[in-house]
Length: 423
View 1: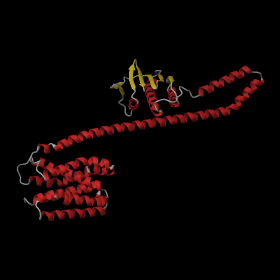
View 2: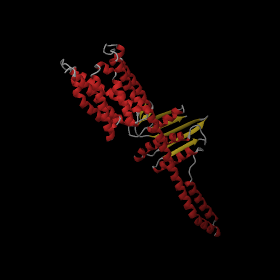
View 3: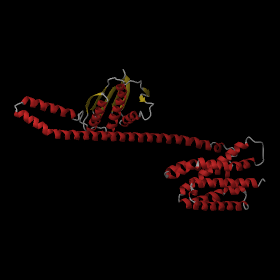
View 4: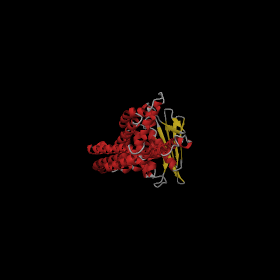
């Protein structure tokens, strides 16, 4: 009994680790690979069984990586053609074997002294634990196969460290069992260090995600602006077509007035036509074409909602701020102002948006003032919104201000929301 139970436990943990390794490598995806791997497992178990009659258990534990892990890695490489992932899969499976051992130790700690209790409990929980890991863990691990090798190595760091530590401190030496403080505290140190690295990595990932969201927003703004410009050009072409069609009738009317010596009537008619044409002309607010198009588009949108926009600005065609950043600044600022005013116009309140901008000494200044009905919540001087997909525009403005080492402020005074930006 004292011989067979540890032997069966050793066979069980070998099968446990080998099946996990194979599942991580997705060896059972085809029947051919599955049968080949089962043959490999049978060969490894026969080799271990034969060697158990020649050498003692302690020696077999020391050479276990050579008689099991290394051949397993080579065979998985032959089946999958992925040497790195074969190594990582073995390390992952070895780490999972520690779950089996620790759970058994936990259960045994509540039991009276029973000979070989740990080995017996480990045998009992092997199959249920294997099923749980195959069902819940294996699908997530297999997804890492598609990740770049650099990311695969990041996930393999902890299993690799534990593998080396376990063999050095338990199998080849007894520093952990003897209670050496350096060995006892090593894995907690590794966990702490890995957690700190994980926090930094997550922070960087979060920042990259925010940058991608801002870039997507910028692209969406540019697309929307292009659509508005195309609509404006299409409308202009339609008006030009109508004017060309009506031009013959206008000339006939003017010719009739001149033939009948009605000069004043003809002049009045010409003045009326000029006024109509002037109303259809695209308003020019400044020399910068990008800003001019953005302002024209938002003025048209505001007028549809019955909102007035007062614009005072001077901006040259070439400025220090890129056209993309100008688009983000003006579009986001005006979009937020327009959104706030729409709520008031729906309640029958008249609204006016005041826009001022200029450039002095290569510094851009922008101010947008609009009425606001609701109490604006601020966090660290930045307005926040609890509505989904809101607040990204403010973040984009702050990101541009930070990029140019500028200043920005968001203030509410006398129910007027004031945005000021200096770059």
